[in-house]
Image (cartoon, rainbow, N blue to C red; front, side):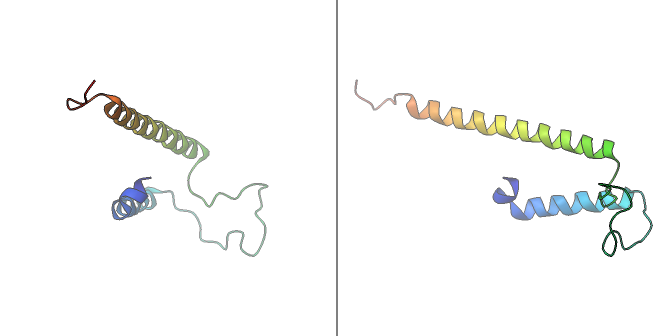
Length: 93
């Protein structure tokens, strides 16, 4: 939704966030990954993007943001429907 409303702003925010992440992320050895061979750990494809605890925290934060966004949109829609259903001063009874 944010990218739809403000694509340049959301792209800039993602750029800043990813740059900060990669500046502070733990360095991993350079390898071919699983391009030429399957991963050594079953289900071990994670790209080295952080610990499972960090991913869970990110998922929780994203879920919380989605709930807040949905609540805000719902409140905005309810406010609009209440305003349109109220009689105006020019309406004759």
